[in-house]
Length: 484
Ligand SMILES: *Cc1c(COP(=O)(O)O)cnc(C)c1O
Image (tube, rainbow, N blue to C red; front, side, top):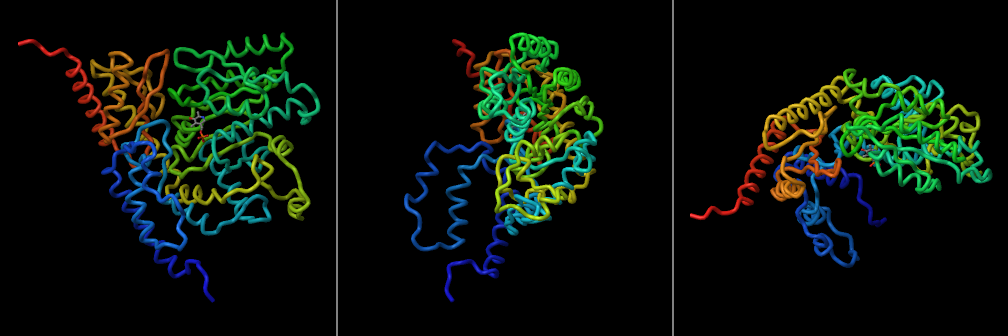
């Protein structure tokens, strides 16, 4: 019987070539410019306008991967990638993800693959232990964890659950919805503002609380704003505190904010998207002080914990509120296991129905590295970043903008904003390293985040020399020619 499918034996053959291709990519990754240098539209220009009528060979696909796609890649997995926050990866994670693709299961409810649900539950319970998080985040207690696609989705999920709790799960009826007010700081991630829009709270009901000189939310201003809003007839219901803001890795005072939330009956969501991974190491856990006051907490193993995108951990203190918010039961999903209440149906823990088997890659990562291995690499990243901060401090032309709490260093050349932008772009154009910028108090600040899986001190040292040399060259260019 003829068909067009790839046979298992051909899959074996082609699959091995692809694994080799990925291994080669990692072995030679440093030869590519870290930031893709292509012009807009150039990848499209190299792709055929029309799809193929007849199937093509894997060899021709691999060839085009090299010729067309690779030049359009910004190499997030390069050890010289220091931009934004990372999205690191590892071979165990890639293999776990491959198995997930291979199984191709839909883990929307327990019955559609019990292992998909139960492995996920156990992994997120493991992480509670590994990070010394509050016991109530465990599935064996009142809470539990679920893997979401992104921290943005976790924020939205938390916000909607908070809205439902505040309106006694009748937000569509009660008319109080217009009165709900949410609180973040001026440094909180943009995903919260987006969540407020999507959840129907409205941007006008989002309060941006000012920050202190370390860019952390000022709790006394939060409290004052809540009082003012109450006096004006609003209903404060949600606060987001951040452990490690995206701009400068600022640490909000979770305990003080949490105590205000308790008093004011507000849902506390803690966003630790990148910095959360540091909680693997006991010496960094002071940064999560007060987290037992949180109603929900999120961090991204897909940022710093060697787990391929996407993998976001979302814990809640009280799963009943979450499930009450998101559960809807159509007839075609009714089944015995769900009805006994003995199992988790993760579709009731988030927005979408269908879900991938993402805990497999987490399982592979945790088992390959062990807690010790993960701690080792996180500590190494932090140490390298701290060393970099010292080098910056000791160069008279540069300044350290903040003492880095972890692995993100905010620094700048002492000349003006324009010079710093030119310096950054010159390094980008060299292709040798990639870091990005932010603005703090209207000053351009350069950000170097050490969190790529394969970054060693040597990479950062070379990058620092490149930055120094590039700054020197720019200064020389700017100097008016001496008349002789
Ligand atoms: C990166 C980041 C996010 C968004 O992460 P996604 O998983 O891409 O949605 C949210 N909050 C903070 C603090 C971040 O750094």
